[in-house]
Length: 433
Image (cartoon, rainbow, N blue to C red):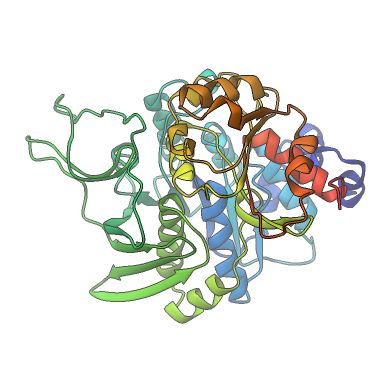
């Protein structure tokens, strides 16, 4: 049935079956939970859920463990139910599950599945029309945590909102002590959230890595918690190296991905794998064969041209992605305003698109908000003669992939539903050859 639904193009098969099953059997997830023998791991947060869960799932599977994982990033209850329905065998038991969860649906997930671990990546301003302010999102996650006092929390210590979650639960912290950009560092001027300490004073920073993430403190004595897994990152143009200090022992890792935001994802996943008992060698072996989840620094080809697809959906995440863009490539920015994207696209004005003003080639804007994106680029001082509007995403990609110069690379930055559209077009072989 799953293959049939994928074939006829309904949601790529990522949620349709789950929606159908939950309608007729609301307790389906409770039933499936009994098939998981060991740790049930959940992941939530604004950015990095899909990549963090993808890396962790790959480490587990590479160590010959059986696993249920909503690998396509469909992270509402229907998507999680879909993952179980299309992968579970009723005559088999599974070692683990790794479940990415939308922040707003985490509490509902815990009504059916009693998870052992929760990884929280970060909390950034995102889809204000749906989530509201950051404290509202934090409360949604806290409400979920309150349902299970035995839940072990893997928390990003560098994010002050995340670090304060779950006061009654066991908390394991990961975070960076230092970050080095080996070739060059592009400083971000994106807006920074200001957070107050519980005493009412604004937090100050010894180090700030990006957005609100860093080493914060208050004159009242409050400060960033000490990390159980201390990260030290070297970020290259084409790879990331991370050293992790835990229990006075340092282990080192390397992965073929880019960007500070991905360094945090790797640190979260590897720290959790170490906590679960996996060895440095087994983790590195898995990282050697890891392939990016679709649209998350995914490297593919269009008509012989190397392309990188990087999802953008909020100011902090987009600004970090923009730091990694190859300004010599053909650049496409595809922005939609469907429900899953968030109807409010005012975040475009907070993301640092000024980093693109030195682009060598024409920048194409596409999607339902192609004109809004073009206007944003104009105000980012991108020369108007270098801005081209092609609302149709298929036409936009075809326009840059027909060149005979196969050394001309492509960078695509889509919003969520634009990414789904690109993936569907790829499966249908719709792009020109």
